[in-house]
Amino acid sequence: MRIIKKIAQLFIQPVIRKRIHRTSIYNWKDITLHLPPGIFHPAYFFSTQFLLQHLLKLDVAGKTFLELGAGNGLISISSAKRGALVISTDISAKVIDLLKENAISNNVKLTIIQSDLFDNIPEQIISFIAINPPYYPKTPRNEFEQAWYCGENFEYFEKLFHRLTKYHDGNSLVLMVLSEECDLKRIGSIASKNNYNLNLREKKRIYWEMNYIFEIRRA
Image (cartoon, rainbow, N blue to C red; front, side):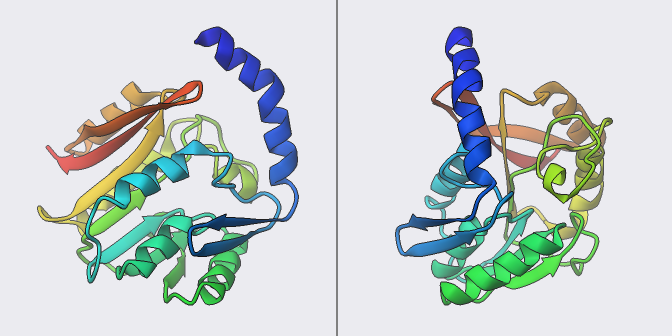
């Protein structure tokens, strides 16, 4: 498996990097997304599709739904089409403009907020929270890198778990998708420090990489 992974990184990843740096259109069922350069493309990054397929098993109709770091907007738009009351956020001004455009073109209503995690989100209890986080330990230098890097000392996760308590109760479902590429032990330690547990709900090997969906619960 390691050999396959190295081959994929050598030959496939350069192709993907080239494709995400040009404008494209992505279709999924009855959803059409306009994707400008630099936006995570759901056809090439497995985590979006994996988390989406898990969410499709859940009844979100009439429930509040928050997507932190919405990126291309596929999960937010899909949830809105299934009747959820969606709050869609991102730290990037470019992504916020894209979310507005894709919401209009797909005829759905999203509450769209530019926010660094919970900074600009009014405190409230939310039924579903979906998180597809950056997890490589490096300080991002620009908006594009914020989608990949969580800070040298995992500042993203420190802030996430510190603020999360204001937005959920015992009935809320908080889901986060991660992969074997990240430091699961370090992220779990930060969660534990803030009185949370990461409970595995699903795992799946997609091509060369194992992916996980965790439920974040209070310890």
